Amino acid sequence: MGHRLSKIYTRTGDDGTTGLGDGARVTKDDACIEALGTVDELNSLIGVLLCEVTTGPLMQTLTEIQHALFDLGGELSLPNHSAIKEQHVTDLEQALDALNADLSPLKEFILPGGARAAAVCHLARAVCRRAERRVASLSRARDLSPSVLRYLNRLSDLLFVMARSLNRAQGKPDVLWRPDRRST
Image 1: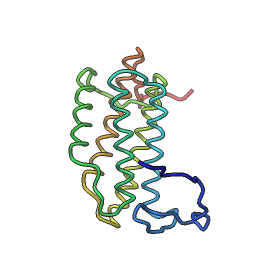
Image 2: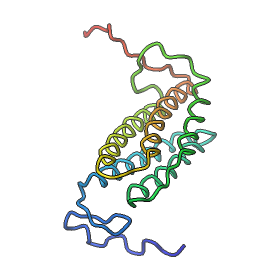
Image 3: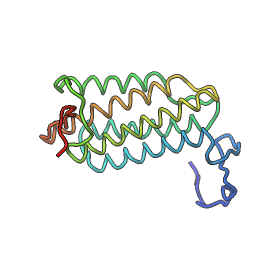
């Protein structure tokens, strides 16, 4: 592969527009750019999480997720391009099932927190849900593969379970929501 980015600034976006993968120009607040930007934000946050999770199967899973999110962004940027397949969803489900098997069943809601890695994972889950909402909005304006929304939905579930697993691995309990708490 040759040099793809020999010059970082092009000045073509100075008018408030940006280019899609097919060359089309759209405003920077277009539904597609909102979805792309949120997926990019999620991918960046997974990168932060990888600063906390540096070895083992979780690191491998998170790295694969980063690649898939980049592919997903390509799919959003190129109308009629399909990169996220059902196998991507199945892979997330398998990772989710494997992690969840070692966790105790939840009887209460939990709050984001515990170990630092778990808290970052919860933040990634929340951004993933926003990405899912942005992609759902985009899907009303143009045809997208159903696998894209399923992937983001399953990824947010995986990030939730991963946060619980990270807490468990670091000896931190889940932070339970207490609806009967009293303010002092």
